[in-house]
Length: 101
Image 1: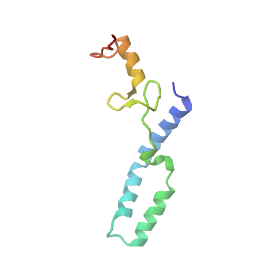
Image 2: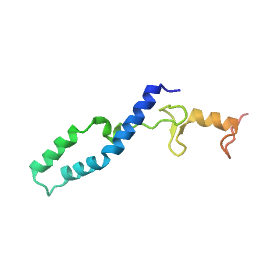
Image 3: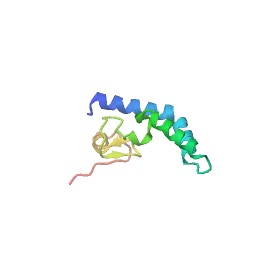
Image 4: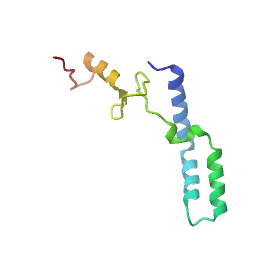
């Protein structure tokens, strides 16, 4: 089980990303538009830099929804391999059979 603080920090980042997504996209569009004057593009870059760092989508990290584990994460299932194996062994996931020989 991951630390509670790490899970909460990730939730906080997710909330910030959703909150600033539209503003960040608008500023990036202005900053990357070659037709805009150089001063306007520079101002957009400065405003973009003043936004919170955790509002950037690249700072998000996928975590298992059951355990909070950041590694060995299956995107399709939104859980880690260990949680998947445990649920499969208990018969909680239909169609999944743990092999043993």
